[in-house]
Amino acid sequence: MNKDILFRKNVKVIGNGPQTILFAPGFGCDQTVWEVVAKAFANDYKLVLFDYVGTGQSDVKAYDIKKYSTLNGYAQDVLDVCAALNLENTIFIGHSVASMIGMLASLRQPEYFSHLIMLGPSPCYLNDPPEYYGGFEKDQLIGLLDMMEKNYLGWATMFAQTLLNNSNYPEVRDDLEDRFCSTDPVIARQFAEATFFSDNRKDLTKVQVPSFIVQCSEDVIAPESVGQYLHQHLPNSKYQKLQAIGHCPHMTDPEETIQVIRQYLQSGAVGC
Image 1 (cartoon, rainbow, N blue to C red):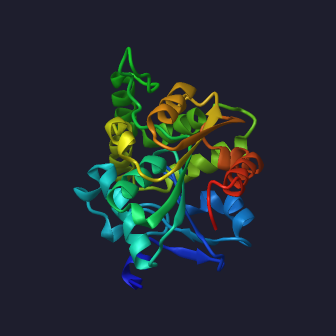
Image 2: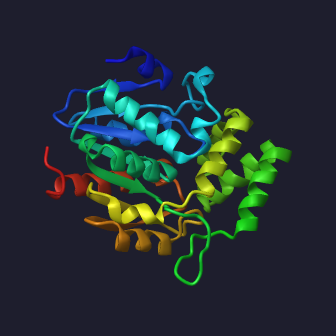
């Protein structure tokens, strides 16, 4: 076990179940966003949680601008955790961009993973008509990055509201805003650029690991057309639409999120 890697990525291991679930947070968040959902599986699985280098309680001094200029750097974080803990047959659960990070990791070393569970995934955030609508025009994303540079606190407020797309959860909005504000703005902006200008559509058909796409309702960041596109192009995939509104169902609607994940795990799709 490589203790340096575990320290660098603030790895936490909970429980001793026969199979491991590896939880990966989305953009601007750390492992604590999984607290409620992870607790529901703690009695039956071994749980692994971590922070990407540069986020949460990770070792910020280990951040490398070149490495984390693309999602491959974050995928390497996932592979490092798997290698350090000698994981195999692991259920990967990722939120938002973490879904693609886990997918990229599985393309490089599929033996680590049994299944990929993707909450609010998107392989490409840019519109590419007429075949694909990712939800954003290029000038919108450039404007988002410019706002991060010029008014980071204002961006944090705006983006938290955009993610939720739901005024019924002010405490979750405030939580997200605080998380964004606690991240180094330079690191956050580079992660945003790596996220929103990534295009992993050509990688989808190469995926060997079975996947479960969990689509949110009224999700501005990853609209329903994107989830359907993933389902059509990911081999051996299943698709489930939630009633939960917005982009963060594990925070706003953890009960429904837990229910659909548990149903998938118990459906025979995953052997424990």
